[in-house]
Length: 110
Length: 115
Image (cartoon, rainbow over the protein chains, first blue to last red):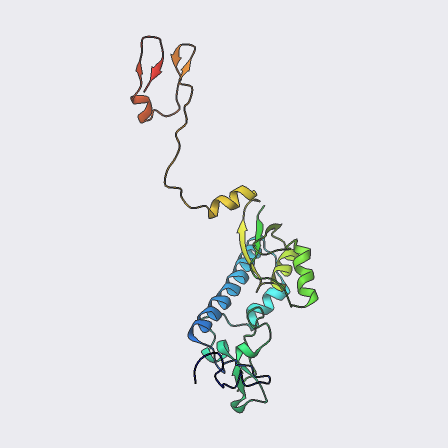
């Protein structure tokens, strides 16, 4: 029943990955910190360029299109659109390299 | 002239070649490495490409390695007082600001001043 040889799905042989379907509260907390860190970098760059009176296309697009961490809905912070999923959503931790890529907006209406 | 102080916080292992290329162009090769680049649209664009991996500050000059290190250094809780030459041509040296130490001085027979 217990111990190293207990008959669980993972030990019973075969490929069985155990990735939970949702994020834990601590993963969600770290995700928010990462979103804020990116917001801070963008803000610093924007302020520095504004002082010099320069503009940057990629910066303007980011500010126009991307919500900040505070503006985002929890749904968009922790889940991502997927057309193959029930209710069209899956955890953002299913996204490859999800801690180092920006994934903030999803299709409207989903 | 102000600079971007860029610290590589997250590694680019497993990320696209182009992302690694941007980091190499910024001069970042290992985590916690700090580089300085002038505030220009050119460098701002490169930062925007790797904004998830770096931490950025705006500074007015390039800090030396020691200055960056001493920012992280905790307060030791003590300080070492060093002996200073208090005599100049047989007279007490003029100090910029009279401190507690100067008040504690008194003249000895041999012309020496001791605490």
